[in-house]
Length: 395
Ligand code: PMP
Figure (tube, rainbow, N blue to C red):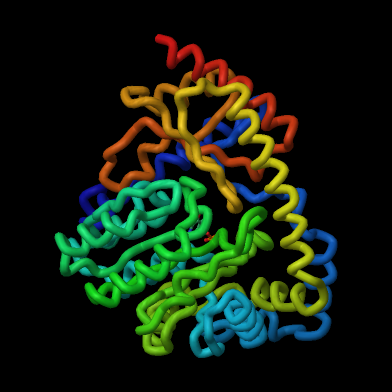
């Protein structure tokens, strides 16, 4: 029966990290592998109030089908948040999606023909790679340094690929590297996109989780020709299980996104949208985000000091000012998949870096997540990982 699948069914394999995460779910494993927010920070009690308020005030409407664009008070609240970070918008620029993952998928559907070129950071977010692969895209990777995508490299790639459809970028605390694009580079990216007539897809789930350093405006803030499609989510600042994300873009783009969103799932969960809006009406989400930042800052600082203390000296690693991840680069010739399996034998897990390179070009890096483990677990897990690295690098 396998011959019944469409050709595109072979374009995406079951996500490698999902397979990895399965192994790391054993209770004895200290896992830095996933990308899960800290569940103890989810506002369960407040959500209890918000749910009750929605059901008693909105009644059946909260359980009914609703519009594809999304619940107006939620779009208004998001539009206000956009304003606060330097993006001019009205609700006509906002579409609510089922997580930002759906926004990425709709982006692929709307813009990618077979073989179209997507320009992206090297490495980049695995599930976006899989989305664009499912539309048969070709990837052109642009090297990064600690300041994000290197603009001279980007320009070179744009010259070599004049038909490129869009630049896919995660400018803040990138997944998987934790790196942030500087203000100057954001401006330069816009200049280059204008000059070479490509779109920019700004995937920005982590910008709201800055716990150190100075906040930077999103790439879309510098957009002069409405060519940036900004995508974000409540997953990291509130609760990922609600699956509430959004697209903020030019109205002409939003109209098309709405048409394709309708095809995909009619609309995002009405109840979840109303509850999210109600939570923001009844509670101070900014105060909640401050709590998340304080905890992630502590965990990130803990992990960085463990890196210093327990890991071999000849490794380089990112020093994030927000988000969920640290990226560790191992010496050339060290295979991260081997390190991963040795770590697992010692009941500690990370993600090998290879799948984050769409063209599979490098295999000597690891992604570490610090949001989902306590400070004590971080110390113990980093000791175990440090032992493995000392042993393996000494071979
Ligand atoms: N983009 C990036 C860069 C991510 O890391 C994630 C989640 N890990 C997403 C998008 C998707 O998030 P969600 O669908 O929960 O909004």
